[in-house]
Image (cartoon, rainbow, N blue to C red; front, side, top):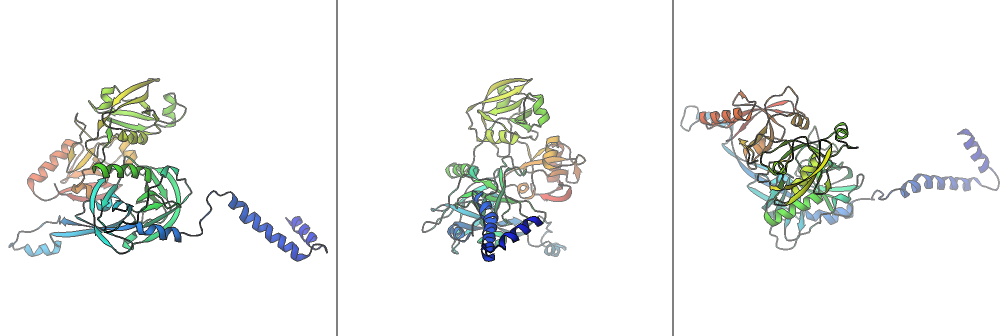
Length: 482
């Protein structure tokens, strides 16, 4: 580049082009090349700040606090006995647990959206508003499958509210703003971008999260994720963090799904879902080619529930479903979501490939009676399709699909928790993907052994039943109340 520098100096030293004119020209050129050109290629340049947006939106964001009475699981010695004094070492027999989260108002009359896990099991729910007003809230409805809940308060005057936007229009790389109650601090604002869309983090059967790098911590759960138009495009629900604090990977439930769930919760209090009685898995590129497809798509059926809708329609294990109700199936998760949205009693056409030939069958959609039934790998069930619960847990043998989904090593033996009953002790203490290795100090390898051990433990004592649980390689001892 020496010749460029020499030419420039030579040009600048000429008498008819004074040095100050050259310098002015050089500064202008640098400005045009370094600033104007890159900015002209941006559809949404970086905002100057978020102050005005924060000022407008914050009054609609609320802090949610809950309390719950909990009975101690530690042994209690009889009153009047010689060892009664040892009860003091185990603490009070009953105590109160509290938690905090976030939410936001979507209707000035007092309708609030939050996460189900923020208010689940709570005896008392209180909402604190931006101006310090505190109101008691009632739970209108909740949906554990999507981790959403709707609350209602009774204000004396209309509340500031925000509206749900169209999450399908949100693009990766767009700016977003999160407002919430991290660590109980209240009214905290953080900004970032959309890092990815349609994320499956194996937290539920309907995962389609928006991923963001905006700082989200404990207490932000249930709070809104805004776009730059001030619309809610997500409900902050989970973070990925080895430390428990924000590392720039957080997940929000997309607003389009929120709209569907909230509408149903407000109208009937519960979410009704369709059921077709299938266990499916996604396909690889190699498997897709063996079915005559040019790309990996669809969902392979590997089991069919006896006397279920799919069984009645003639669907068999090994069929590759590529369309459901005229909608193309990308993967097994896509099929699960579409089946859940279908209305019970409707007939839906399903296009599948069997033995290299395409075939269309009609399925009469059933009703998902139990919330925890899925169109994914199932537990041992009867012909009714209802799960056989053990201590409030829906258990399954550790199939290859479950081991892959929950990262369970081949050496781990036991029964996999694939769902828990709402309101049960198991729902509070166990997670999907936990492996129950022992019940009451005895190994369990099938559902019959699990039932037998629970029955024996309950008959022998009124104490909680002790479980040995493998959670991602870590051994835990968890006691469940019958």
